[in-house]
Length: 453
Image (cartoon, rainbow, N blue to C red; front, side, top):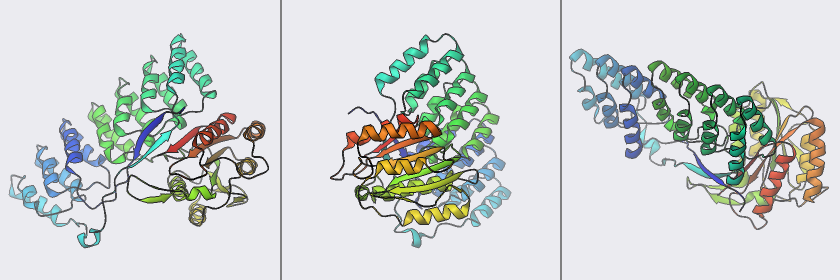
C-alpha cells in the first residue's frame, strides 16, 4: 500500500455517568499543576461542557484550592456538572466557617441533578475512531525537509514550501507539522507556515496540539498558534490539558477564551475556507455498505457521510457562504439549481434533503464533476466517492482527469477529493479509488483525504 495512516479520534460525549477514574485522575493531575487560584478557576471553566462529576470528584477539586472565596467560585462552576448529592456533606465540610458552609449548602441545594430514571438506558459513548488516510509519505516528507534546510533565508523557505505544496496534495499530521516548525528560525515564520498548511492539517488530539505549541518560546506566539490550530482538536473534552503549556495567568485566561470558541473541523471534509462551495456526494449502491463504528453503532457509508455534511452545515456554513449539494449514481441531481446563501432556512432545507437520500445505482463520476464545475461562481468542490466510475459519458480515468484539468484551469476551481473506504462492498477497488481521488485533487490543486477502517 502506498499510503500512510494517521489514526485520530473524534470524541462525542453523551453520558449522564460521572467521568471515569482514569480520565478524572489525568484531569486532576493537570489541575494540581496550576499554581494560582485564578488559574485553577480558569481550568475549571475550560472543562468540556458535557463532562460530569461525582460529588467525591468535586471534593477532590475543592481540596486543591486554598481560600474559601475561591473554593466557592469553583463549587459554583462545578455544581452544574454534579451527578449526585450523596456525599455533599463532604463538600460542605471542606469549608471552615459556618457562613462559608451556608453558602456552599445554598449552591448545592440549587443543583438540578440528572433524572436517573430517564438515563438508565443511555450508554456512555466511546470515542469514534477512524483512520484518516492522506498525510505525506515518509520519503516525500524527508525530501521536503531536506530541501527546506537548503534554503538560506526565511523568505526562501516559505517560497520553497508553497512551491512543493503545489506538487503534493496530501495533508500533514502533527508529527510532520512539528518537524516543519523546528526547521524554521523565527516565530513569525512558524506562524506563517501554520497558516499556509491550514486546510491540509489533519485532525489532532489535545496532547498533539500541546506538542506543537511547545515549539514556540513565548506565550504570545503560543496563543497565536493555538488560535490557528484550535479547530483541528478532535478530543474537545480534553482541551484543558492545553492550558498547561502557558506559564502566566493572563496567557492562560486568553487561551481558555480561545478554547471556548472551538468548532471541530469535519474528519471527512476538514475546514471549509471558501466562500462559494459545492458538496458532491456519491449515492450509488455501494454506499449502502455497512460497518460497525468504534461506538458499537451500525452505519452505512452514506448515513455516515450525511452526518458529517450536516455537522459542516451547522458548524461552519453561515451567511458569508453560498453553497449547493449535488448527488450522483447513474444520474446526477442537484439540491438547488444554483448556489444559495448559507442562512438557517437554506441549511435546514439542505438537511432535510440529505435525510431523504438513499443509495442505489452506479457511479457517474465524469458527469458529476462536469455538473459541479459548471455551477456559477463556485470556487471549491468537495467531491466524495467510495468507488470507480461505472456510468456516465466517460469512464476512462485518463479522459476524466484530462477534461477535469481543462474545466478547472479555465475557471480556477479547486476540487478537494475524498475516498470514503470504511466498510466492505463487492464492487470495491480500494487501491484504484485512492489513486483516482488523488489524481482528481492533484489535477485541480485540491486536497486529498481518505477515510478507511
